[in-house]
Length: 486
Ligand code: NAP
Image (cartoon, rainbow, N blue to C red; front, top):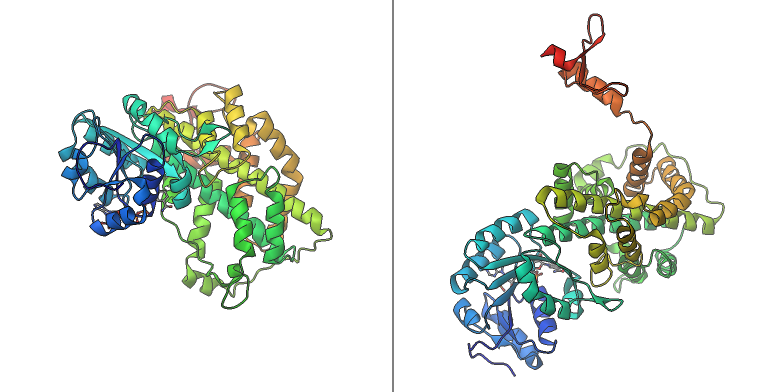
């Protein structure tokens, strides 16, 4: 039964009742033992929610004082408002009406650096602040998202049963874990989204090749993806891609994909991943190419100006269509492994930089259901980190090394063929180049070091002697120890 009485009857509250907040509130209310207080800045959203869902027994509140009064102590509030200024505005209000020991959870898509700042500021008041990444979109929010909470271990004790009750379930386990302190949860959610960008771009490149080289129609490609979804590529994104490709436009009768403008939007979490990885010095090249591919697509002026430039391409003759489809599938799987490997490298580097004790296997475990990148092969990531918690690179784990090795001839054919045919496959190509770079015994970085020393006296190290060296590049060109020059 819906009540407006502000007595402390609710064990959790939700602030922000747009699509995500209202669905999470309904999810919370549907779990035994939960009574949910709700508040939204404008009353209309609150009214709509309580009117449409009387079965949820929401405790509707009209201001922050009522909201706080409706919550049992220690109070727990989940904020689901527009990330950025909206989140700060709500926190400012909540700290006025909450008390030390209470818990504020920000479930929005916050930048992890903002979460670190907010956590420190709120902690100073004695109130706990938890930045929690939540993935799964509106459907996940209602039926079970993947949840990545950061914050203190003390707050986790209170939050654990509540979040476990609403999270997605994979093989009987809830897709939520305490990721680490302060911004760790939002950091991991950011990387999740970066991997999501790469996954989507790789699928799009595979589709493009099947269509332009293989000559398949969108409906036929939908069948191919549906088939792939029964094997090692099984994932939510492959599944929905088949559905997107099968969709026919009601107005024109054409495949819907052909009437959608080919300019991909972005909300920023992919760019955050790449910016953060640049700061940390982690090559997330597959993810970066995916972000840049969206930027390139969204520049119609440059694209129009370049449209008449020559291709200088060769026709790609496909003799065996089934073999070609299998090549694309293998290239996609190998590139996907690279994207995840790079994403986990960024998690490792972030954990070192910010002193978070992040269990990599646990992250893969909570991504198995509820979130956008949920995929069958995440079990292999959990297994890889279980057998070696200090694994230096995911692609060196036996399962992934074998998977990539068996895909290599196909992967190279696809990348080389794309280049010769003038078809852009930036994520496939950069993933392969990353793989070759990482496994190379010797890299041309030695020459770069020589160039740096030439123009900037940046010094270099040698393969055969300890020390730091600088060469007098003009004159007698003999190297001297850098220490000798200072
Ligand atoms: P949204 O469109 O991002 O935000 C709208 C909500 O924010 C409304 O309830 C609005 O209140 C409130 N709001 C904005 N500024 C405010 C302020 N200064 N003070 C108080 N409230 C304010 O909503 P959403 O799509 O449901 O997303 C909520 C959060 O979840 C966001 O951080 C989003 O990035 C994150 N998220 C979204 C998805 C998704 O699939 N949509 C998935 C994961 C995470 P009014 O009604 O009064 O305007």
